[in-house]
Image (tube, rainbow, N blue to C red; front, side):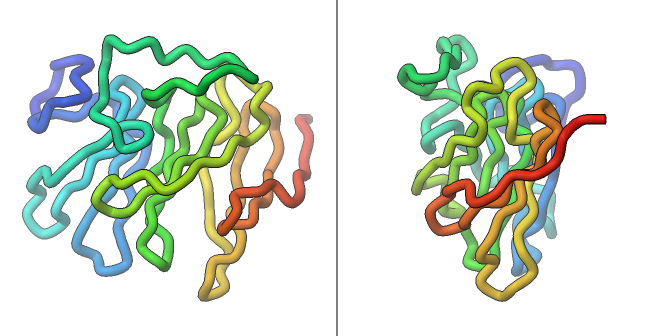
Length: 172
């Protein structure tokens, strides 16, 4: 990439403050949470470093000029609120994306096709609730553990439904 180019969520030549990188099971693709400045997920070929594809919220083309305001109990923004804070491949090759400021996790196929989303502590606002995720260690990865840095909690989700099953923790 080319440093110093600022926000351009549709550039294929540079990133803008990537939050996290994760590699798929096959070891061939890297998923970048390119979301502190840009509003997207990038996919890079691990062997060559070549830029392969990218997408925004709901699999949409990112729009840096779109209104991405998030107000609980109103229509969700069609762009990532940001920062896009994780892009984690699961054992069944789905990509789980943390839209931290949007208090949501969106799930995609590796080609960027949107599948579903789940809201986590939707009244959080400000710094958001979906800071990072980890999958349970069973083969089916039945659970997702969501680190919520704003509320200082961990949320345990059913991975299939994205329903919050249990929450624990408190600041201090």
